[in-house]
Length: 187
Ligand code: SF4
Image 1 (cartoon, helix red, strand yellow):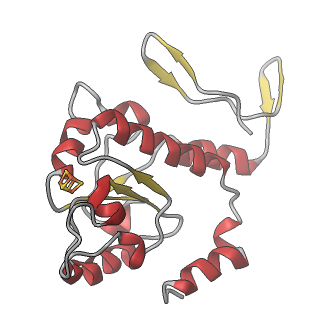
Image 2: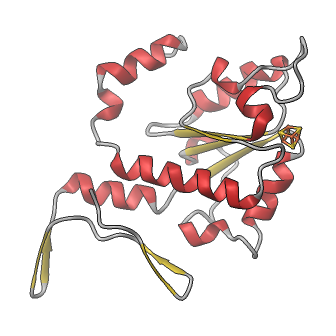
């Protein structure tokens, strides 16, 4: 476990990993350093189809400023991103597209379902709408709300950072993770 994140004049500092600190040196293990780097340099891929996408725009803008978390670099190429943020109503026809985008992302990758529609279909309990994106891809964090406020999106993002920071480097090779993907028909 790393030490808690510290705040000073609204500037976020990454938590220092546990280890041995002496005069002019610090010793820790590679896993903690990689987790620290990953959790503070997440590159989001926004997959926005409707109104929740507007809340994401507000989250990226200067007032809430997701860049403070090391994520100012929003990517629109799945191969260069490690966090898929799904925002909006996902029609069943879009399911295969969303899944393909997910498959094109390299490991390690994480997914947030932002808002009621992405999480559960929301108010659209109809034949044409996917009743939650976890029917086609695994989801790490669900953000409730219709729409969720930017604070809620930031909260979900910080949950992802916690997950990334605590996830062992070998989790992606574990039988449990492979079983999870196999449940979605992903090798
Ligand atoms: S959860 Fe609400 S605000 Fe978000 S996409 Fe669905 S209907 Fe729109």
